Amino acid sequence: MSYDVVVIGAGPGGYVCAIKAAQLGLKTAVVEKRSTPGGTCINIGCIPSKALLHASEMFAEAGHKFAELGIQVEPKLDLARMLAHKDATVDSNVKGLQFLFKKNKIDWIQGTGSILGEGKVRVEAEGGESRELEARNIVIATGSVVAGIPGVEVEFDEKVIVSSTGALELEKVPGHLVVVGGGVIGLELGSVWARLGAKVTVVEYLDTILGGMDGEVAKQFQRMLGKQGMEFRLGAKVTDVARSDGGARVTFEPVKGGDADTIEADVVLVATGRKSYVGGLGHEAAGIALDDRGRVQVDDHYRTSVAGIYAIGDVIAGPMLAHKAEDEGVAVAEIIAGQAGHVNYGVIPSVVYTSPEVASVGRTEEELKRDGVDYKVGKFPFSANGRARAMLQTDGFVKVLADAKSDRLLGVHIVGFGAGEMIHEAAVVMEFGGSSEDMARTCHAHPTMSEAVKEAALATFFKPLHL
Ligand SMILES: Cc1cc2nc3c(=O)[nH]c(=O)nc-3n(C[C@H](O)[C@H](O)[C@H](O)COP(=O)(O)OP(=O)(O)OC[C@H]3O[C@@H](n4cnc5c(N)ncnc54)[C@H](O)[C@@H]3O)c2cc1C
Image (cartoon, rainbow, N blue to C red; front, side, top):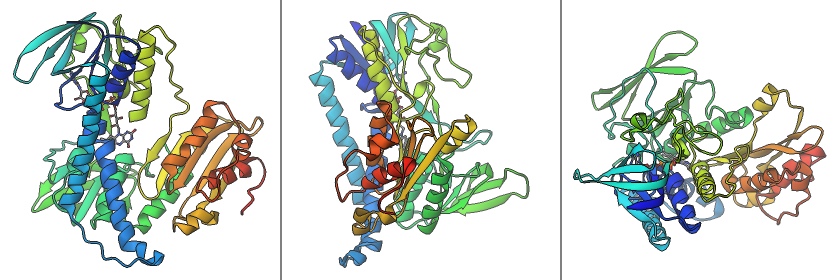
């Protein structure tokens, strides 16, 4: 069979690329080794985690906030039902994708794809059957897998010592969950189980959680999670994770030196990041170069070292985010179709879907300082926002960073209810090269949480009104 585009991997990078390519009139196939499309994101990542985050947040709200709103309930956990909601959410997203493949006349080919060289892909199905596809263009979108802890052998059984995949389907709420890694995935899944009743301890190598996020935001956020009962052991290097009687044991030592410590846990979640995946792809034989971190090397048009072969998503450099993969999928389809595909890496929002949410776009204050940029800051707390008070969602604040001279918006960081939705107005302003004054002078509906964004923008070049 001969195609204009064969995409290997049906995650958000690959499936979006296939849909866009088909919309642009290119004959397209997707090769995927899983039985369902959607990749990490839909099957074991973004979507199931958000289903559990939402359900557990509702459970916690019912237990802690409803009474203050005049609603008397005694929530009772039905974990099996909550997990069934998560599975049903995944299933409906998978079905939606299967429909989109059909609608766009994309051939779905199940099996492991390997590249035989320019324009040739072999697909091996699980039963051992294999077939060859001819492709004018090949797009590698094979994503990433769990990275583990550098220098530590971890035996995942996905019951007691789990990765994010096992943490999405624990059969009962653990008494004590130890999370190794204070990044987005660890904090989100830690939050799920903490809200359902687990004691959660986060062990993190760095001196801060959410390394790379704005420092002020990360600090405040840690305090909020602390109030929710989460405990933190920062600056701690994990040296061993092993099964023990009835659970598992995590051993760590201070990064700065000192005595080792051990915590016993019912379940240990290792959430120390992910690494690019090229297993079974045959990249070496095909002459496709990787960078020093094992990622497929591409130029600024997503071209690999072999003509006609492109790569996108988690398998290449950049933030491991579904929307970054999707945008690259669109860009590469456009490039293949002869258009000017492009991704603006300066404006990729990132969101932590905890309660409250954390969202940011653009540069952090630390980055601006490091780069010697002359900037100004505007802040506004949700405690001074009417809608936030009405919803008992006053935790958090908005922080706006703008160029000191031009007022051009450089970064926006939000901790608060709905931060993941609010961040996009900042993203749009930044995409258009706008200023904090542009954002502040845009009429915002009242009463909304978004008025805090407007107020923080006002504070950046003048004064907020409601503070
Ligand atoms: C628990 C968790 C929560 C997350 N939450 C979020 C979130 O809220 N927001 C967000 O933006 N990101 C989130 N992510 C990250 C997000 O899932 C990834 O960034 C995204 O899935 C990357 O997309 P991709 O298409 O590059 O790769 P993937 O989604 O990893 O897809 C790659 C696909 O390629 C297939 N494949 C690999 N090799 C082959 C081969 N040789 N032949 C055929 N098929 C192959 C794999 O089976 C897989 O289906 C989360 C991740 C996890 C683990």
